[in-house]
Image (cartoon, rainbow, N blue to C red; front, side, top):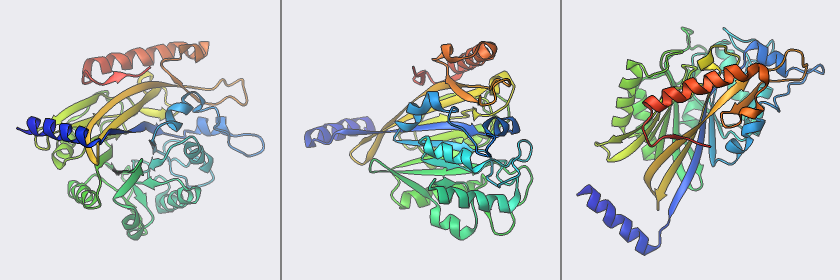
Length: 358
């Protein structure tokens, strides 16, 4: 019966001249700033140069209708520092915004690396740059003014929510708020987003086990919970390695749900082969009139090429798997291993309709 109703509705909309519409979203993983990255971007005059980092994927970001990245470094000001207690340059976030990212996610286990001052400064700097962010807030009042976050993309209302499993044991102080994974809070945010007219609900989860290449039991349990709550898209980060993509049908809600367990690293200085890159996910959300009628997703693998130490102005650069000729000879073995291992994992575990993009 539901299938018959869908066919009748489709026929009616066709007769009424209501054409299908599509919104294309791009998601990337952990945008990090380890100390070697900060050094590589530093110039003698005191400026920071990130211009080469995303040059080969500029079109993928800029041409998307909406692009989202996980900013896994607080903007706490100088002195800058890398792992284990991060503080990244403001210029890094600015370059993400200038490159076409429309939203930065800030709820992650490093949100409190520089305490409440770091959280408040990160929120302030991003606001001054005009870059929307969700996940951390300077106060409960500021959270209430932002959440639930609903992006207007080509006239469609897409709710995006962001939560983290924790903050490396660091407590929230001075009134700041970080969105932690709490099922009651998540359920309330989803309900509020629906009340505000969200047509699509996307939940971005900082979850899982670091360097594990398949979802753990907590990810599986939370996925079931989110699907039961009626979300449409789940995007994961934190493991620093790519995990599988899944399309799952929700019998309760009568629709397909797109799940990305982990996008891996976007840009970082990590050394393990599986963490030398990540995936750029392209999600196509289809509407018939004002109603969601389907989701498709594909991905590109991105390798993070490290700079040549002998070149003072060389920097980290993201290279798509489809561009092996752009890889330097000294990085070719790592590129080949990362791409081969990640492709093998995804071929084994991905839903069959989720394919690598050219």
